Length: 73
Image 1 (tube, rainbow, N blue to C red):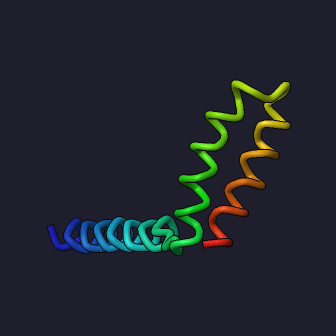
Image 2: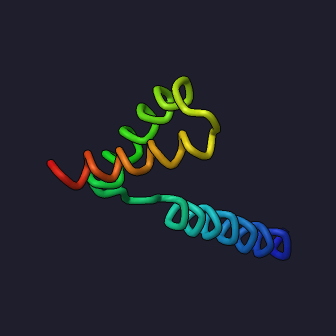
């Protein structure tokens, strides 16, 4: 039982350590500008998809509008 106890402690410490590491890697802190850009870009892309010829032009227009609206407030 002593041998198994050591392996269990090592295994649990590895699992807990990996959870902590993965949480810190995937925990992105966004600035207000990032959140503004993300929201405006999504809204502009939806409206631009209907009026633009291609998806590339729609994305280009949405990116320009999002950058303009979020930086000129």
